[in-house]
Amino acid sequence: MSGHRVFRELGFEAAHRLPYVPEGHKCARLHGHSFRVEVHVGGPLDPGLGWVMDFADLKEAWQPVHDALDHRYLNDVEGLENPTSENLASWIWERLVAGGLPVSRIVVRETCTSGCVYEGPPSSAR
Image 1 (cartoon, helix red, strand yellow):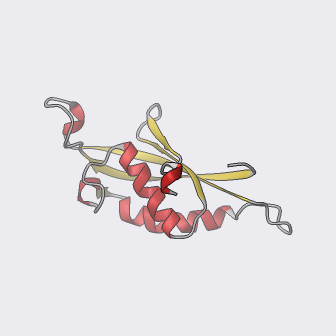
Image 2 (cartoon, helix red, strand yellow):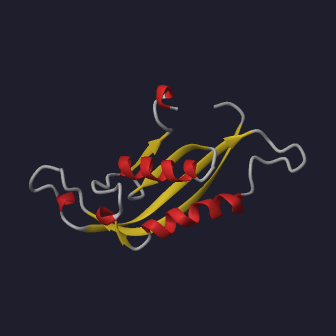
């Protein structure tokens, strides 16, 4: 995507476990994270305002996603029965795009050093 992109870093607290990892894997046990999520949006600059979008509007679009995930057991959230970072990034993308947000990238961080970048479905699916 050419042009400008803006992003906002947001977060939520949640617990999960990964049901399909090999037996004995530590992530098979219930555990929690302070997830950090970057929501990137792109588009043309508004000629009058000089921005892609108001950061406050981005935060407002995030609120329903936050409400669905914050302080939840992610495995119980519909569509997140296997709540890997990769599946979580796709899940967030789908909901924000359905809400009309021009999402260009989702970054999900489980820890300060580990995460996932998702830039949407393959071009043929768009």
